[in-house]
Length: 320
Ligand SMILES: Cc1cc2nc3c(=O)[nH]c(=O)nc-3n(C[C@H](O)[C@H](O)[C@H](O)COP(=O)(O)O)c2cc1C
Image (tube, rainbow, N blue to C red; front, top):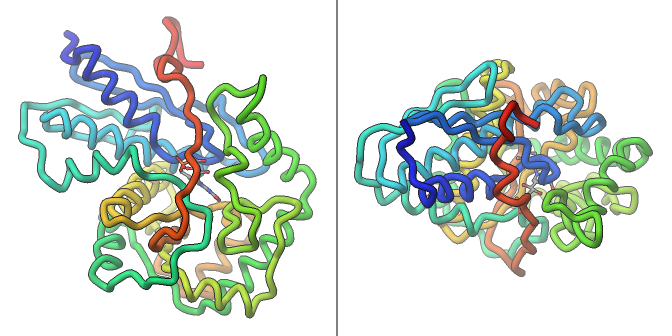
């Protein structure tokens, strides 16, 4: 039994499509089965150098699941989300249920949220807004931490940046994902040049061969001028990674509702040994899954493209 009209399906598809994803790879598809909507993980999307274990792909699917859930609620239906081992998640659409003001505000923020890889305005974010942004990510098994020890963090990020900048195979892969967003090869994925930043960390977002690396003292000072959160999970299972992505998106949308902007950093976490050192140097309460930086915008951020909505639905006979 199909419960969704074409229009309603469009609402869900647009919300999923707007989710953030590693290198804007949009590694998901939707399978509608009556009152159940499966969010499928597209395992054919491979980032061998950046994301060899598919961890960021799962985080991305988790972020998309948050958007899917919010879109169902915005349509005035109850819903229940279950993480899956064979797909990413299944959202079961329930009875009619008035959309809460909070859910509707988060849903509306989906279209406004963008990766803001630029310096923020020097204006500090009030304590209450910071607390609300962090609280949006808290859930069982999940911790949102304001990192102390910025000197140590700067040292680690500086080290990771230099390694990634000089890794030619890594840079080739990144070049591919940042070069095919315009011109004849453009299909609606990848990160456009305009959305990146030529500046040094912490605002560069994705470290490229020409990214300037400041010394550790300068980097620590710049980190201190921003607001940072580290999302950690108690354990590091597939479900943890999905849930961390979902939490990251709740954090990001909550920031957007509060007229804040931000960007996410997972790139250094993929380096061998980096995660363990971050845990010990910053005394983190779990496995770090993503770093989120946020503040008020100084200049607007450029949008990134999206794949045509039709690509969200698997062709008859299977996923891509
Ligand atoms: C799991 C995950 C990891 C990401 N890692 C990084 C990163 O290390 N650096 C960065 O600049 N952006 C990162 N991003 C942001 C994506 O590049 C961005 O969401 C995508 O290009 C789409 O652009 P948008 O966020 O403006 O919609 C990440 C996003 C996700 C969901």
